[in-house]
Length: 245
Ligand code: NDP
Image 1 (tube, helix red, strand yellow):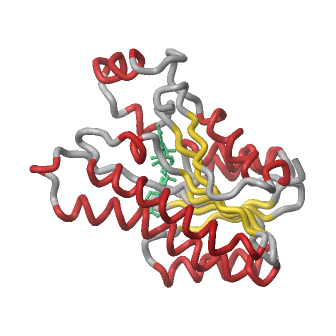
Image 2 (tube, rainbow, N blue to C red):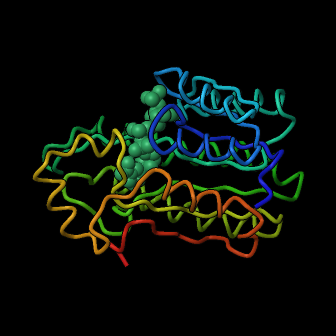
């Protein structure tokens, strides 16, 4: 699907879905520019190098717009451009509305929504000049369904859908496709935090009766960043075992 030789910028690739994505792109022969927030992604870099791909990792808080611009500049200095941007970095700070701290609301909106805005604003300047590019935002099923205890997270992911569609419309004339992959419940550190009772309840509501894997998400993201999806933009692709249709 023509990812070979392309430069892919992935936020939050130290673990989970981001790590899986980085390795999948490495297998396809892409150059990887990956970011982490707290833990240097030694394992991810090792896995990438096993596929013979070039990679650079930098520490980046995506909610900091100057730091984002610096990171994008570093990517261009190292690899010459950005062909694909995957906005994967995301956090949860769950709690019921009446108990949710204002700082928990702000932190989640800043990382998940403002972070994607900062990244797209910075990277799209490069893509607009080249008149080609692919952006894939990682949303969530709860951005469409809502979820008790996740007012901040659901709002950030619902906002990301509006942001994706607006930017898709703005950049379409420059041959840049902007789409969103909305995972359901995927086996990662994020879902490890659920207790057995919560997992059981979730499984009952999934028609395919299993949690998704990071590979399920990576396959969809790879498709939306390849030439196989050139006529798709502003789309929300649900990867959730049928939990939300
Ligand atoms: P993880 O918690 O496993 O990893 C999150 C990644 O984001 C880490 O690399 C982390 O870096 C990084 N990160 C966190 N905050 C920031 C920040 N402010 N700036 C830059 N990087 C940051 O997440 P998952 O792999 O589970 O999720 C990845 C994406 O998929 C998220 O957007 C999430 O909302 C979404 N998603 C996940 C689902 C799931 O079931 N797991 C379901 C639906 C959506 P570090 O390790 O250094 O802290």
